[in-house]
Length: 73
Image (cartoon, rainbow, N blue to C red; front, side, top):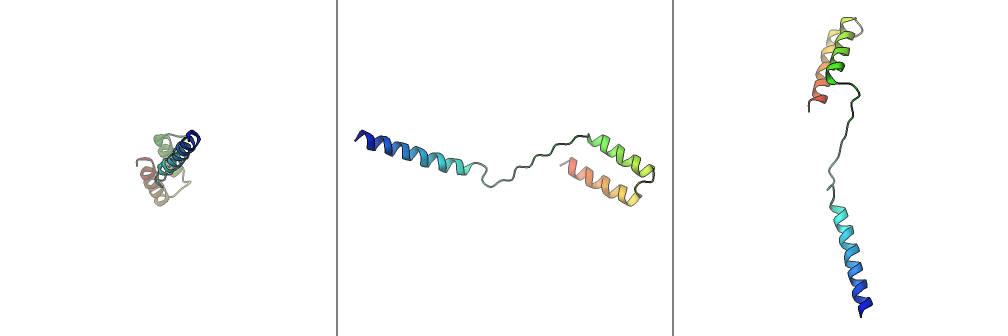
């Protein structure tokens, strides 16, 4: 009798643990991003590229807008 109770408890604990483990996250997407440069440094580099003629004004404005949108969420 004691073995049956122990087995039943062990089974309940395993099923409970598995169902609880399935609840974590709930399908949510976790995104982590690491930046090696500060936003200010990237904006300065972008501006320097524009001033040196490496990129055109249109490309500079688009890249600046995209950078600000990405980094200020």
